[in-house]
Every structure is written in structure tokens, then in C-alpha cells.
Length: 443
Image (cartoon, rainbow, N blue to C red; front, side):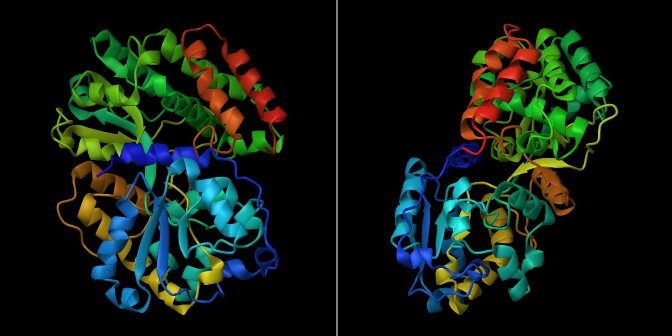
């Protein structure tokens, strides 16, 4: 089984892809604007185009086809084909131009948005409309729905994989130093000072991978300015050079100046950071819940699964953001074709909505954005905590570069080593990023 971290990276790769413009055929060009609500004709089989690098979803669907969804499978047999992450957009573009999209398929993020190639032509099923018609909408957690709508501008992907992000921490280290879960940024910085003084790395991150570091800047912004912090930059109503935005980069830089990330953070991979935390060398790490696979693996986790806590990014003084606004992502885009969504496909969708959450959790300990409709046994402590948070969360935020164009998103990490090593000022870091956002707007 591939690691959840790998699945997170594939999802990120697809998120950063810009769709190739479709040369739509007459068959596609004449699509009914209301077709995304699902008034299509059933195919001869339930063909699913999946990522070649990750068979998790196809494996779980196959399991359902032999058990809970066997009736639906008899009427419409499940068949799986694969495509590599690098070729997703090209493949789906070609299939769409030939009026040959399979009933279900992985896609590029930009393609599914309302102004994207599939979204603009109403070729992707609107899951919210369809699930509400089936009386199954309540099987999607509000948190997952919030995240997907922010990413795609509508409910055009299913949350087969769903992750929150936050701070994992070593409970025994916190107890030893007399530290409670920090509720504010000032509390967090004070805790880091205590851990550094005790000879422990306060918080470990994979600087070589870039994104773990940009997450901290992004989350400071969301806590300072609220959920629309980056959206306002993209709309032009705010700039990354505004004082509050520069404050976030400055606060991050101060952590690096004080050595709170430990030595060699820029050359440290996230796998190495995970190992530092799970071997008891670091008190905290900011990461996503894809890390649960490592936390629940005794061969990797030397501090014990029950010794790992999970807390939200703290609030910022005078800020508009709240602790219950969790950063999240919903894995690789998973769409269905509106043109092949007939009664039999509707039955399949309803069965998936009813059963996938419990099946994936029981089978592989995977957290999804589907409700658990059946009791799942032997759920690890931290996993159960995360599931409870998801079930009780209604509003989520995205990561720092999620709403940026691909070039600006890449720039956030390219300049990170310079920012961490104080070879680029917070003002210059944000100014260069703002210039990129303005230059590449709409691209």
C-alpha cells in the first residue's frame, strides 16, 4: 500500500496543474448547461480512470463491488483503468474532446472549476445536486464539502481521501515542561522557547520540501485576517505587501532566527522531520493527517501512538480567524461524467456515499470525507480524534498557495531557503510573490 504522504503529494501535483485548452468537438460543445446536475444515459459498465501511482480508491471500490454494492455492480460492472499523474490533464482533455469521458475519472483541479474546460462545458457531475436528489447528501461531512467547494467552486469532486492539517505534539514532552496546548501564537512561541532551552527541537519541518514552511505563513494569515486572506489577494482587494501580510512572514522568520526549527531545516525532508518527531527528538511538527499512517505504525513511531496529540494552529492577537477553522484538502480530484450519469450510475453513487467511509476506515484506517455509517473497530486514538474533529467541523480553510497560479505557488517554496536563512527580508519575500501573482493572474 502506498503511503498517505505519497497520496498527498500526488494530490498537490494535480492541484498545481493548469488544464490544456480543449478543442471541443461538436458533441461536447452542445452540452446542455444543466447537464452537470446529471441527466445522462447510463454506460455499459462503471469505468473508473484512476491514478496509476495509487490504487487505494480502486481497491476500496472493488471491495464494495463484491459486498455492499454487489447489487449495483451486477447492474453496472466496475472496471478500472489507470493514468499516471503527469498525464492526467492530457488524457482527460483528449477523452473529453472525443466525447469519451469515462463515468468516473481523476482530473486536474483547474479543469473542474466553473471556468475550467470541464466545468465550463458542464461535463462534470454536480455531486451536491445529485446526492441531494438521492437523499444521500448528509453522507458528506460539512468539512469536506466546505473544502471541495473552496477548491473547485462547486461540489465536483468526491472526498475519497480527506485530510486536516494541524500541529502534532508529544504529550509527555508537554507534560514534562508544564506546557498546555497553545491557544495563541504568543503561547506557541513561549512553548517553543521552553523546549529549546531543554535541548529539544521545538518544531520540526521539512524545509527541503518547501510546503511545510509555507503552511505556517499561510495559517498565520488565516488566523490574522480570516478565511478570505488569500482570496482577497487573488481578487485584488488586498496585497501581500500590506502590513498584515508582511507580519505573517516576519513572525515565521522570527521562529527561524531563534533556531526553533533546529539545525539544517532547509536541507531536511519531511520524511526526516517525521522521523525526528516520531523518535522523540522534536516536541511538535505541523503536518497533515496523512501522517497518521506513520503515527499508527510501531516500526516508525517510537514514542507511541497514544503519546501523540493533535491541535489546531493557534489564534493571533486581534485576529479574525478562529481555532475551529481547520486547514484541509480533499485529495486528488475525483469526478463523474454528467453525460453518463443515469439511474444505474446514481445507484452506484448512492452506495458509495453510504458505505465508502466505514469501509476505507475499517480496511486501511483511511480518513475520508464520507460519514461513518457503520461502527468501525480498533480505531487508533489519534485517528479517532481526527475523525471526531472532521465530524464537528463546518468551515475549513485552504493552504497558503492553493488559490494561487502555479508559477506563484512554486515561488512560495523557491524563495523559502532565502527567507529562513535571513538572506531575503519578509518584505522582499512578499513583494516578489505579489509581483508574481499580478503578472500571472488568470494563468
